Structures are given as structure tokens and as C-alpha cells.
Image (tube, rainbow, N blue to C red; front, side):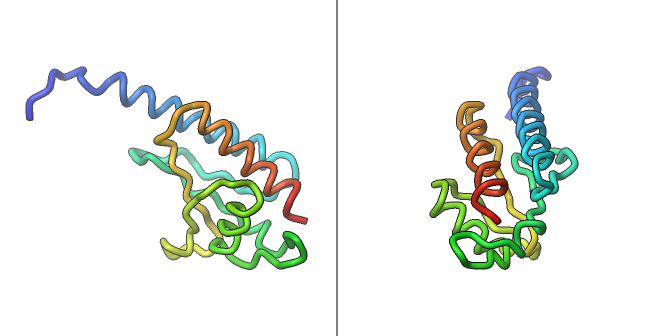
Length: 122
């Protein structure tokens, strides 16, 4: 496959913009109650891992969150947002969030994650 040298520049720039948006929104959510620990910018991936350890000892609807799998199950139930638990990657304190989605979808997803971590977990 032969492509012109600049064939992917616009795509790369778009994914960098989405990545930066996700990181800004994660930082904003984390700054509220310290329940999320945003990651450093990933290099060359379409997803970020976010540490949710501060939420794991908290309760949602009376049940202790406990691990990233339960965090993701409760997030899906409460906020209709599906993320991948870090347990699947050997990190029981993390969640994986893809930014291969539109800006509107990312804003909606991060608003749901923010509300879950800062309002539902308690």
C-alpha cells in the first residue's frame, strides 16, 4: 500500500484532538472529589486507562464497588455507559475508555463517568 506522505495527517490530528478532549474532561471530573486519577497522554493508542481506585471502596446503591469489573457493571446500570474494566488487562484499579468516537459521544460519555464517580459513588 502506497500513500502520499501526508495522507494520514488529518486523521492523526483528529485523534490527538479527541485524546486531548478526553484528558481535559477526565481532569475536570477528577478535580471535583479526587475519585478519578487521569492518565498521562497515551502515545499511539485510541484509548486511555483511568485509575478509579478511589471509587472502589465506595458504595453505589448500598453495595461496595470493589473492583473495576463491578465499577463498569454499575456504571452501565446507572449511567448506560459501557467501558472496559482494567481487570481484563491485569489492572483491577483501572478502566479503559476508547476515544475512537465522535466529540459529542465523548462528551456524553465523560459526563456520565463524571456523574457516576462524583454523584453515584458515595
